[in-house]
Length: 276
Image (cartoon, rainbow, N blue to C red):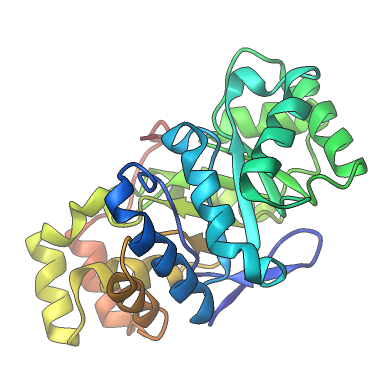
């Protein structure tokens, strides 16, 4: 498994597990917990969730899934922007920790930018680090201008930016990814298969067929081939987890990358950061 290094030196698997839209149906709960546990057993120990997902129920599901293997998991959660203040962030973090059945989160993210000034959020995050409730912090859905503003507000300890990035959403390659790389920050890519829409792209399916892979595996492998990029696909079943894990072993030749560049062109000008 390819590993990605954070600024403080810790390394995590490049292929992790997302949980957006999990815990929304009681009849799927057991299968979703089994899927997360299967992924961890396969080395996909980076698990991402958020207080927003299913109004906290997703954190409870994740907490149950990882309870017996907590020390093997690099756990990520995210706070609502309206909870990112000096007063509210500690309470939001405590609530997440209780739902997750743990005493610390390995990475705590600001889910997207809100009205709370960055300087106040940075201060609140650093206090949580000092308290041992989070081990590091970062952001999500911040474009290049917002990242520069964050750093100017004292946010140099930011560990990552989690963004919408896949073959059909290549805008970050123009300026944001180079900026993050220049500042030593890895990128965390969410919705790597575009909520299940990307595998239906004919051009992707044609290349995948020639490789003997599924379109979803090819979409994941393309992201995994990028320097400094972590990928967090969601899988609601153990079979889907196994399909995703196989993508980490798919090595893409230069001619394959060229075919994908032709079908899904790189940006030639700045593109505003998109989010879902």
